[in-house]
Image (cartoon, rainbow, N blue to C red; front, side, top):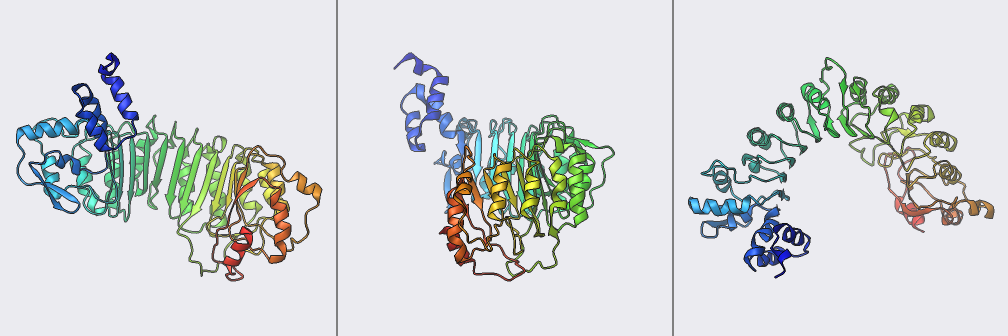
Length: 485
């Protein structure tokens, strides 16, 4: 054997690049003494089920159910040593489909090893889904830096999460997606966040962080990403929050007004991506206040990607005849965001944008790459942007790569002149994805539109049907087929 293969680092790199299954890697570990350690490191580096921990002691473990293993007797010291010789190699655990592979008694055993060294002493990344007790959090992970938890209930996580907080002091990445999150879990997570000093990304989604946690996060120099929910009773901090290196922020709230109030007390000097998720339909004043707060937070100078989304979606049989009409004046403040590359607006308003208004907006965003207006909520009007308006938009924003707009094809039956067709390619150095949403199209317009789009840089068409039309739901399948034609 070549002397280079006696160097553990070289073998580790080679084995890490091999495209082979666990059986082949286990065979490598048994090939020779030189291969054993690096092959075992690769074999045990990532687990997607903890049953392997029990199965490595076949004399002491048994299958207690179709999906779970257990220890049928107490482990000897020798068996504990064997366990640790494997578990110290584990760097990542990814548990999906709500199945960790061990029963309750097995977790209890693993939580209490007869040594001072934790069983999973070198685990760095933990990702798991649970719909019952979060048992895996009962295990100590002193080296953990990344925690990703998805759970169907906040109740099952509270006690194990509290014990877990004591054993993992160096978390850098935190992701929590918990259905039915309550104030108790929000307080627990907020308290723990205030004790972590090395956080870099925090995604708490529907968990309500308190003002102390938000103040603490604003003082984290390494924090670059934050996603959290704002409580309607959130008090004002004693002084403005200053997120010095935050690049990506997502705020969730029942009302857009609450997000605007928070932004008005916050400084975001380097943020490039900002998303607001709201549940209630905003008023015209709410929308104006939101645009203003984006500017006062200092994000207007650096923001590249801006999204305002409302959920949940309305049922298809809901008519929004009384909804507000979105016009140029409602989006005009966005024209000050000259560095925009992506703009997404999706709220339960009816859309009243005309060709000239859209082109006026686009003239302020020469670097715009993605534009989406009410892709999920629908425009809920008879009109839309005409093919000529679409052409003007492409001329203003030559960096566009995807568009989601309703196209107004009414009366578009004349074939475009050859000169216009020749200019439609513009030309652009790339192709563009176009989503025409729920655009209607009559049979007599198909030839003219086919000629128009045949000369454009659009490489992909999508048709997303949406409900809530004032004029009543059309036969959307017919329109889809015509757009496909």
